[in-house]
Length: 449
Ligand SMILES: [Zn+2]
Image 1: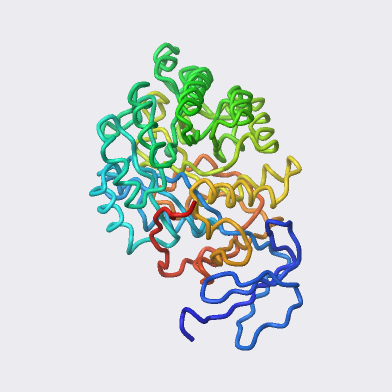
Image 2 (image 1 turned 60 degrees about the vertical axis):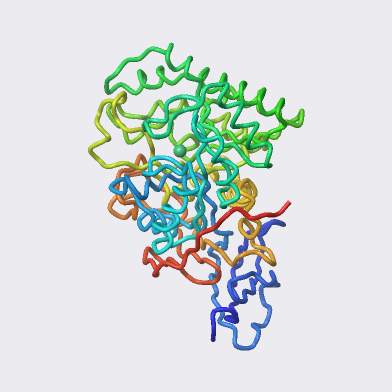
């Protein structure tokens, strides 16, 4: 049977669809979902049947915030290792951030280099964000036409010299250019002046690090973004929101019609400042993990729809860069393989369902990126699935991670939700921690109004 006419019928007593979770049989032909049928539907002739019993069939996760660092810093991560970790964690599509690789994705030529490097290695579907830096306004439209999903910028230093931040004037110029062709600007929103005037103490104490990245830096940056977005009628997305103080501003702007979307990350929702041991820089990221009371409000923001998505911001480095000094250690938390169980563990404790998790981690990020064939179990979409045993538990052993560097803030935690298998366009790409050969495809932005 050829790849285009393979028929599959996937059964589960708990299929998570846009209309709710129910027993169903999902018919798949040639990698696309044909129909979501009653559970006891007779299989079409020649169809292979997979019955997952009470394990949950979720839409494959879409992670729009991953730093793969390939080529150039492949000792930190790479397309082979990152996409294997993604597949093992139930993610079927990821978008790579434009920085930390060399070259950064700031010109079409650089994009082509990255695509060439990635193509033979990807185990899940993979696309690229472009970067907006002070010198590349003229490159933005060609990059967009070449298929990047949008553009990332920083307002404060990014941590790598080849990807400088934009000042307010440069931000306005890039945003106007991007809005001019209907693109999306995604922003690391921390205000440099607030960061510069915050107490700068180096050392192993987490409290000192937290004080050096105050909430005001986020709040002020977001306030500024809202003003620009309103004036230019631009689409703007706030990356990795940590400060819950900004939620009322965001909600008000959205009510008023400003085209603003927001993501947060598993670490802000599952780890708290109070529990970070001094010197434990595997917990360092910017903006930082804040207090438990802040975390409660982020969950409320998800529940009321002020926050759209949960994505990993997987940003790994080699072990030696995680020095015990919070000032000098590389910032970034590795969680690509662990996002789903980490979030599910906390979501269930707070009374949320897997329908909520699928919305935050699959449907909303797919919508953000305009990936119209991803993000839901319904007819016409790609047959991308994560099969989850939601009540099974495991303890995170870094040695079991497919990330290139097995450093993670989740080490030793017991999490709910074991990913039994992951399916990409009807093909099982991971099963009980065993990965198939790569069948991921490179994705470009879809032209669809
Ligand atoms: Zn990031």
